[in-house]
Amino acid sequence: AQTVTQSQPEMSVQEAETVTLSCTYDTSENNYYLFWYKQPPSRQMILVIRQEAYKQQNATENRFSVNFQKAAKSFSLKISDSQLGDTAMYFCAFGRDGGTSYGKLTFGQGTILTVHP
Amino acid sequence: DTAVSQTPKYLVTQMGNDKSIKCEQNLGHDTMYWYKQDSKKFLKIMFSYNNKELIINETVPNRFSPKSPDKAHLNLHINSLELGDSAVYFCASSRPGVLGNEQFFGPGTRLTVL
Image: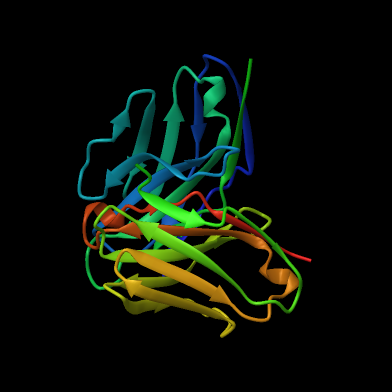
């Protein structure tokens, strides 16, 4: 079974600065996907970024980028030029690539990020 | 257009009652899920259906019964509600085997059992 661990329950950052959220996972799979989801106070779950394990290149989406270290089973999220709208709970999640698992995601415990003006 | 919708968004009820939450997706996905988010915000899978067939049942009490009339709908019926059932319930959908089963979530239903 896969496990996902987010060791930072809460983080804070000043507007316009950079912050990194940590995530580690445990799996015996070789092919998989990792995700960061954002849950603002509205409680809607929003996909921030996705990383395919077979790709060595780190995924980037505008101000959001990841540092994917497959051997270390680490998947951190970097938010550059933080904005007030980035205030949310951030979840790291693991998903298997294909197979018969029919896609359940295993989530970490979440990190509450607060961006201060 | 809403991709994954849930009704109701809020549900307040008494212990012992039976209630249902409905979910619909218009993404053409084959797989739908129910997740429970507890008071500590931890998200855990409850059920997964693929093309109306139950695939995942993660040790959920028998009082919870999902029903999928077609692959665009997955409803959750809860019998004899208990205080511990208070949580936010999320419906999600995905296309299996595509992009790691990236899930598209509904807005959530906050269930409060008094």
